[in-house]
Image 1 (tube, helix red, strand yellow):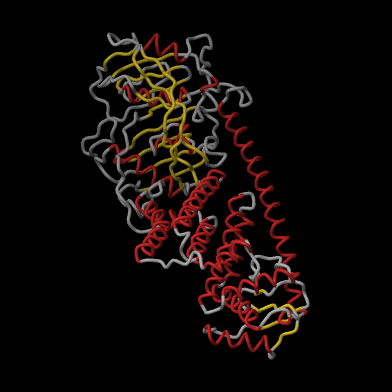
Image 2 (cartoon, rainbow, N blue to C red):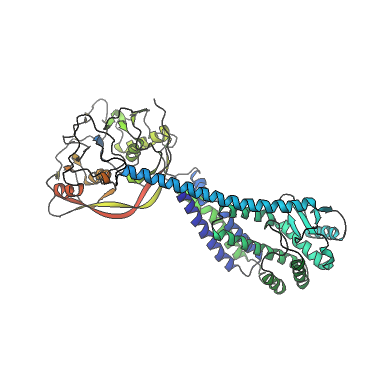
Length: 607
């Protein structure tokens, strides 16, 4: 959430900077052009680009996924033991919990500060609004007299939609328009005796222009922006720009109607001499903005160049791009989530079963079944996501507290004899969306990682050899009439001929690629491991090491089967074992990593 808010703020700040450049480019044009540009920059603070991207992502068209899922080793048996208590330094579970708790506390504190600031801003404006509303209520509505006659005459001349009520007040405030839906002209009693008839007409015309432009509504919208982003100084500066340009726009309109510039400028100065400005920016008056600069512009008719066809097209294109680009991003970059059966009818198990596993056992099994089926015992939602989306633990962010804690038994019945092995992943994604209500999106983050490289180019380690296995069914049986046996689980002391055996302080296989070895090392090393060895083909290997609590991944199991002794703590470290036994090493690096962020996940209904 905090990242989304930060993204919105910097994007809005960038848009405000671009708006500033546009106003400089149009500094010699009508003030209403610059006012519109600043208004667009203000409203951007209320409309995150994420909303437009989301709107685009809901549109019907979806591009095909750019890459197919990468193959992984089928995990036939996973056994682990506890490493360290959650409170031990370096323990990932404890570190994640403490980090999440700290982030939650900080987010709560920031929200509290924001609410306090926004409440103060709104309270101040509410008090001022009630003050002006009380003056309007206490004033006398006038339906005749010289001022009212002048108001009606100018309304007919300017094409008014409905008469503007005139309320005479004994307040010290300048003439101004109060109200948004049903505005009224608040007129200080006796001001017409201090001004000439032409000056009175000029001031009334100025207020009518405010009503025609709906300046009070615009000011109220920006007041909402200021309340929401009270901590951002640029928002307050944009507010001053809006007031300045709206007053200049009204000045230009009054002068263009035929008012003498000198008479009009004198009416503004005389009003400032005897009356004070209204306390709210959404009460459009006559004396706002820099008076000296305004008088100079009125007398010199500065800043009134007309828009050409090219400049109109430029403004229209900029406005269109501000809306269309984020929507297009949403259309062409669909939100990553587990596939639903409605989207991919064929990528789904025939029947699924998900049941809680409360056994407390340390054994996990994930096995293929006939006709493209699949079964898993004692797995977490985090494990399922890791398999379904071909990720490592540190590529999964967010999610509920029980993501790597609660255990389930999952079964998916196959309905496609001879199905390709790669179809397992979209089927699992469908299951996650259907049973766990999983919704996700991807982000690219700079994360620590390891490169798996060779120590020497002439030979490999003694425990890493080319594979001699020839019959490793990584796919389901091709047909019921000619079934091939599915590999059965093995004890942790044996080498898994097909697939990978992961145990406490031991990992082995009789038929895997180096890339698959790197993939399985990732959860042991605690960070992503990328194959940089350049070795091709299949290998058999056995790696024995002393587990390091500081490298424990979130997928490590909390218990061990009865009778299984814990791993020796005096053996070689993972890094030393890789060098001595496989002739490989891990080199620390950093790089951009695609991270799957979990937006929503729910406990499944057992069946």
